[in-house]
Amino acid sequence: MKKRVFQIFGFLISTLGWLFVACTMAMDYWRVSQLPGQGGSFIIKVAWYWSNLWKDCFIDSTAVVNCRDFPVLWSVTVYVQGVRGLLMVGLGLGFVGAILAFIGMECTYIGGNDKTNDKVLLSAAVFHIVGGISDIAGYCLYINRIARNFFNPNLNPTALRYDIGTPLFLGLVGSFLILVGAVFYAVTVIKVLCPEPKVVYASRSYVTPRTRSRTLYTGYYQTSRQSRASRESRRSTLSSESKSSEFSNISQITDEKISDRDAFV
Image 1 (cartoon, rainbow, N blue to C red):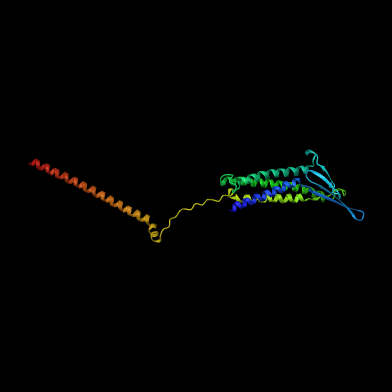
Image 2 (image 1 turned 90 degrees about the vertical axis):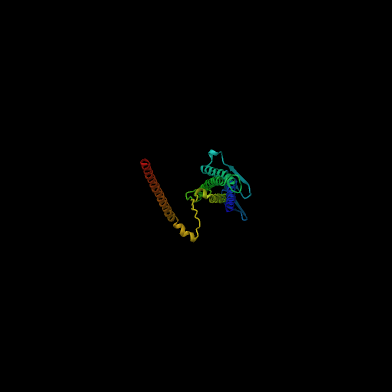
C-alpha cells in the first residue's frame, strides 16, 4: 500500500513540475526593465521593457504593446538558443518519463510482473532526473546572463538593466518538483538496485528435554550396539564353522572305522 501511495504521489508531483516548465516556455516577462518618469504635476509616465525566448516587447503607460519577434533560428543570440535547446530536451525527457512512470506503476497493471514494473519505473526516474537537470541548466543560464548584465560596472549607463521575471521562478520550482517525483520513484524501486542478501536458515526440529540427552549419544550407542552385534555374529559363524568341521572329522573317522571292521569280517 505504501509503495502505491509513493508512486502515485511521485507521478502527480513530477507531472505538475513538467506542466510548470511547459507553461514557462510560452509565458512573457522572462526579464523585465522599468523606466519611470514624471511628466507635469499629476501625470506619471512609466514604460516597461520585457523579453522572453521568442520576442522583445515594450509597453507604455497607455497599455500599447509593441513587440519585435526574434529572427530566424540561426541569427538568435547564442544563450537564447542554448536555453531553448535545454528546455526542449528537458520537456521531451519528462514526457517520456511520464509515460514510462504511468506504465510501470503498480496500480495501473500495465507493465506485467513486479520486477518488470520496477525496471520500467526506474527508467522513468532516470528520464525525469536527466530532464530536470536539463531544465535547471537552461534557467540558470538565462539567470546568469541577466545577473552579469545587471551587475556589470562597465555597462553603458543608458543601457537597460533587466530584472528576473516570474517565469524563471516558476520554472525552477517545476524543475525541483520533477526531481522530487523522480526521487519518490527511485525510493519505491530501491530493492532493484540494492537487493537484500538472502539468508537461508536451517530447519531445526524441537526436541523435548528427555529425549535431547538421548539423541546426543544416540550415535555412540548405536555404533556400540552394532559393533557388539557384529562381534556376536562373527562368533556365531566361527562356532558354527568349527562345529561343522568337527562333525565332518568325526564322520570321516567313523567311516574309516566301519570300513576296517567290514574288511576284517
